[in-house]
Length: 187
Image: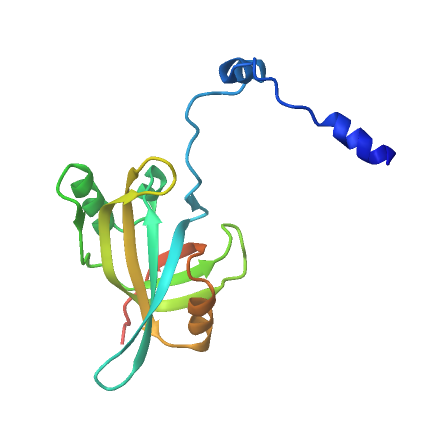
């Protein structure tokens, strides 16, 4: 009984006479805008894995496309392919709402769950980059509507157990991508 009384005594109603600004100045809270989330670390970029796409070709080979979306920030200017940067500049300069079907060379992609993780969730060598586009998107549902530039694309490869497992259990999650252009075969 004594413990319950002590807990109730510690809880007190907030003092409504103190204004929010006075409280912030008393606590030395910096009211300037804070930088956004970190989106590029150690050559890896933060991306949202949206969903898988399953396809077949004419001879019944089966493929999986992993769809990703990246909210573009200044940090991405050091890591993205030149064609994506050109499309981003075009859209930012008022060239329209977006640019679709960007020709991106095949990529070797390692997918990690953290920015500094050593063990990859999945790896794709020579992934085709399809449906690559840069566009202005309006985000709603978190207060007022906010517009930002998004780069979205699909990484396509033959179906494998590893890719199927990743595709089915990670949709909607943020992941870290290490993307490098794949060198063409010398043969």
